[in-house]
Length: 258
Ligand code: NAP
Image (cartoon, rainbow, N blue to C red):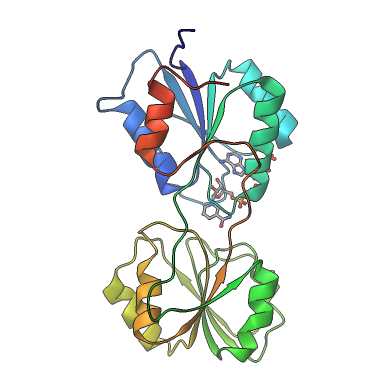
């Protein structure tokens, strides 16, 4: 059977990789004027970095709403390039793809791996991270994002430095300094931050990628413990591309198989 590369592609975005994929499909060797690529953003960030091509912003209304959108827009391939912790959207994508028969690919950068000297404490959730903290330190650098701060809200004996792109959602722990910043961050910046704020424990999701990895190196250098929240599982049966090149190949080399 001869397969045809999809002409109508929806990228569920909100990540660097999603933007790089949209850019790779818009310009360069994989560009194709006959293909319409739309990137979808949740609309959580006040001033998002917009991807190349068409962009839509806001939720679809669950898996059923996404399925309706795929049908209405005659989408021929769906790429879930959301953040590894955007668990609901990934589940909705799998359900909508199954309901419509639209081929689905997950674009997921690999998670981080510990190196010699790391003092990692893997946990399954933000709640587990909060429970682990009092035994590990007093001054916490929290980099788990603006949502989910409520998990730490009861820890009034600890001092938090919470770094996020937009102001974090309340409730916050009683002693919280908010640092608004968007990566990438350099190793020198991260070392300085940990020292200036006398941080003695770091909390992060296992987001993976280079843009925010230097905090792990800085923590290792200073011998600090790191509470690392493990990734949720992707829905079963969804093929995974670990980088943009693999996703481009899936979309262009004869087209995906359903
Ligand atoms: P989530 O909990 O998995 O999804 C909650 C709801 O937000 C979804 O049901 C969907 O609403 C809407 N949504 C999520 N991603 C969307 C997208 N790309 N386009 C349109 N609607 C979307 O998601 P989340 O963890 O809040 O993440 C929201 C966005 O931020 C995602 O795009 C993700 O890539 C990005 N992000 C998340 C994190 C993180 O740590 N979770 C970190 C960095 C970036 P409907 O049901 O109405 O369709």
